[in-house]
Length: 117
Image (cartoon, rainbow, N blue to C red; front, side):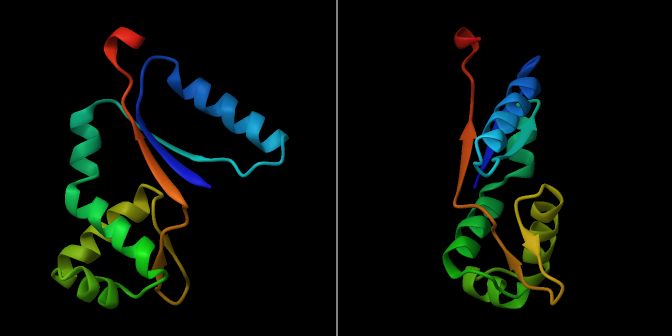
């Protein structure tokens, strides 16, 4: 399964839902879709530091926040804040024992061009 992050356009959510239904009917795992109304909104949530955390966590596998902060060479408090927001966005999972992980094989960020609308 992959996460698809995109800028939304009028009606784009319906296309994403239609594709998810088609994939599930064909027995495929549905992709996770996350939409933002603007590039500014997308990059205020998915900062370079948060994208780096996703990459680091994907490489090391399931981890405690402390181990993730140590591996990423970042302050624990900042990592905790970033992981919490990534969890709220659905890009990180937390287990009952507090371990965090990235449940996706890949994450795609899509930007539709204005003239392609």
